[in-house]
Amino acid sequence: MAPGSGTRPLADRVKQALFGALEPMLPGAIVLDLFAGSGAAGIEALSRGASSAVFVEKDPAAARVIAGNLRRTRLAGSTATVVRANAATWVDDPSGGPFRIVIVDPPYADTELLATVLARLGAASFPLASDAAIVAKHFWRDEPPARIGLLASGRVRRFGETALTFYRRIDGPEEVPEA
Figure (spheres, rainbow, N blue to C red):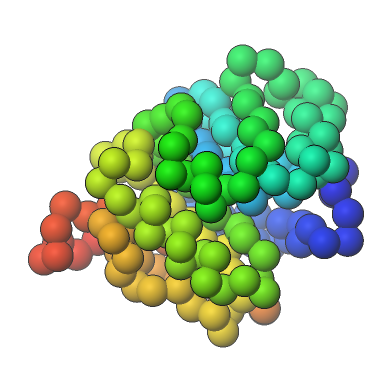
């Protein structure tokens, strides 16, 4: 179930490609779904073996939809936490982690918001696993920075109007992430 007309659902083709790429990392992973909408990304991760997921969504109706979707899929409980908060500020003082997979899907119209959140995820203090994957979903023409904080993109996949940019944390300015 989707929260409303302002939410872009995770299209099947994009979801298949995203989770095909993340599949080896999912077993036992702690997942962070930022701008969670219906919770489709985090729920898919849980259904594929992630140990837990944190869903961050500021819209109260969308947060209720996430909780309902978790109940319907029988994934509600100690493995799923729905946080009703602004994702851009929540990342400044996160709870949980270290996150192995982070999915960032802000509104396409706010291109600065994606860069802001990526910079905060790329801070040394953000609780990421050493082998974490950060995936930014965005409008294909609004490509986020290739390097931001301690994050560097390794690849970009395009699906019509939607693109996925995959990031890894790097140790310093000379390290190049694997594609």
